[in-house]
Amino acid sequence: MIYRRLEIRKGQCPYCFGVGYYHLVVGGTETCLSCLGSGKSNVK
Ligand SMILES: [Zn+2]
Image (cartoon, rainbow, N blue to C red):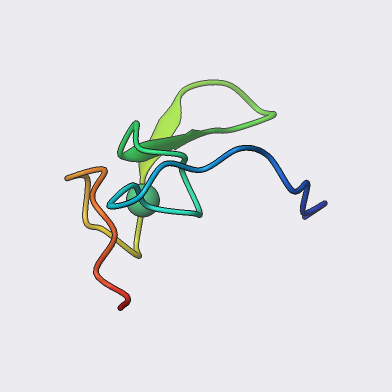
């Protein structure tokens, strides 16, 4: 996975950028394991 330093707002999950899921290259989506789909950062 290529990590790009994008603009991340405070409180947003840095892994899914606040959307709560990943887009898979094979199609479809997968729930973000970091925020469990909430899109909010759980890391302080
Ligand atoms: Zn997330």
